[in-house]
Image (cartoon, rainbow, N blue to C red; front, side, top):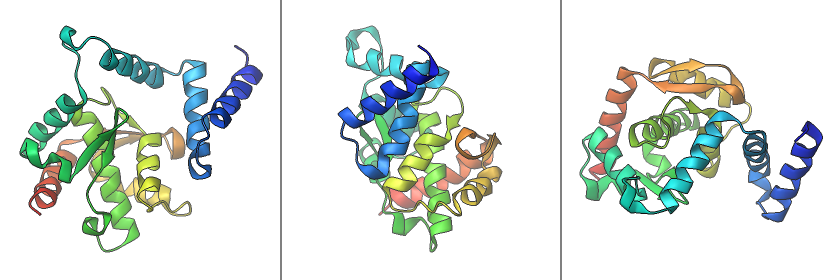
Length: 191
C-alpha cells in the first residue's frame, strides 16, 4: 500500500468509525500505524486477537492483566479497580485525578506514570510504552495541555528511560518509577 492509499484508508476508517472530534487525531495516527504495519501496533493487534480467541491456550484475559498489575504493585486484587480499569482491552486510570496532585502539571505527570508503568507491569506493553496511550489517557481525564505536555512528560525522567521526543517518545520504567508507583498505588487503593 502506498502512502496516499494509507492516508486515504486511515481517514476513511476514522470517518466510518464516527470518532469524536477530540480523538480524531489520535485515531488517525493509530489507523496509519496499523495500516503501515508499525511494530508495536501489529503486536498489540495480535495480542488482542489472542485474547478474543480460545482462552484455553493460556492467553491472558482482561482480569488476568489487572491481577498481574495488582500483584506487581502489592495491591489487593479487589482494590485494583480503585486505580485502574480495562476498557475495550486497553488500560485506563480509574483514580480521581484530583487525588493525583494539586496542579495540572502534577496530575498529568502522575497519570503518565500510572499509564506507562501500569501498561508495562500488567502486560499491555512488553517493552517501552509509546507516547500515544499516555497522551490519550491524559486527554480523556481532561488534563491535556498542548502547550506544556512535553514538559510534563520530560519531568518523568526520574522514573523512566525516555527515548525520542514528542509523539515519537517511548517510556521504559526504571526501578525508582516502580517504587514511586507502588507508593502511589497504596495511597489510591486505601481510600
